[in-house]
Length: 204
Ligand code: IMP
Image 1: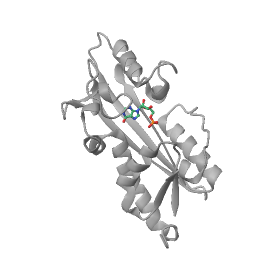
Image 2 (image 1 turned 60 degrees about the horizontal axis):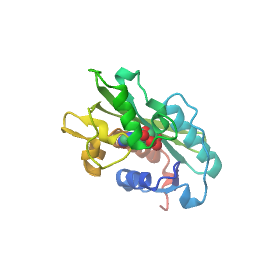
Image 3 (image 1 turned 135 degrees about the horizontal axis):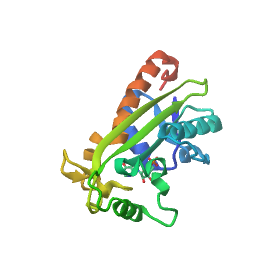
Image 4 (image 1 turned 90 degrees about the vertical axis):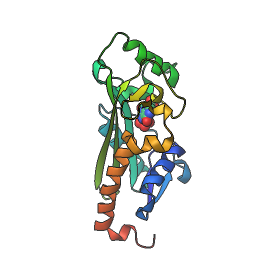
C-alpha cells in the first residue's frame, strides 16, 4: 500500500520515512508519481489546511494521501504569523526577512513566548480520515542564531536546550519539534488503522 505525501518537498518524505518507516507501507511524493496538485491554503487553521491538502491529493490520485501544515504562533502577536507563516510580510521576503520582521514586531516586548504547531491529516479514498497534532514551545530570541534548518528556526529559542532550532542538528530538532511530535502521534494513529485494515499491508 502506497501513501502519497501532499507535498513537492522531498525533505518531508525523508523526515516521514525516518519516523514512519517501519510500518510496512511506502510513502511517495506527488513528484514521484507525476502529479502536481495545486491546493489553495484557504483554511483558517493548520488542521483545515492540512485536510484541504490531503483531500485534494487523495481525490486527484485515488490513493490515501497525507497532508501537513505548520507554522509559528507568537503569543504577544495574537498567534501571528500562524497560518500565514510561509507568506508573512509578503512575497518579496525570504526566510531571513521574515525572521527580521518578527524581531521588529517584538521590539520592546517582554512576553516572548511562542510555539510551533503542526497538523498531519490522512485521507483515504473510502472516506476515512484521521489527524494528529504536534506542538513545540519556546520563545522568540533577540537576534537570529545558528544556520541549520529553515524558516523561523534561527529565532526560535528553547530554554531547555539553551539553543535555537537553527543551532540544533536535524536529529536534535526532530526529537522535540512540533513536526516530530505530530508525526510520532500520527504514527500511533496510522498503526492502529493498519491493524484494523490488514488488507492495506498485505503483500507489502
Ligand atoms: P509548512 O506547512 O510545513 O510548509 O510550514 C509553513 C511555514 O511555517 C514554513 O514556510 C516556515 O516559514 C514555517 N515553519 C514550519 N515549520 C517550521 C520549522 O520547523 N522551522 C521553522 N519554520 C517553520
